[in-house]
Length: 149
Image (cartoon, one colour):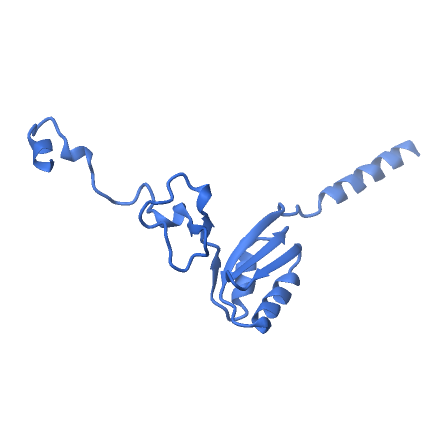
């Protein structure tokens, strides 16, 4: 009987591990334009029905939808867009979170008070084409630096 118990425990162990892994608990913030209580209620109900959602918070004043749970952010965004509303991931962060918040391109007129545009979205990528400053100062032309100043 001991061998049978061993095999049955082994089969139950592999069956329990065969379950799909849960997505990590995360917070998804989405910017959605809401005009009335009906829009707010519809968005809350649509997102609440998703599998893995723990809490849904709606802030109509900031046009912000916050979803906590074991969900995929892209699926939440797709579900919100299915209501016919224009939606995007929350593009703002609190102003005190940025080392240099006064850089050009950080402010947005539509941002809530105390928030600025996310620096990863405000500035171009590091590999974006830009001016090559190394070529301005070369050993071949020593007077090139003087022409700039």
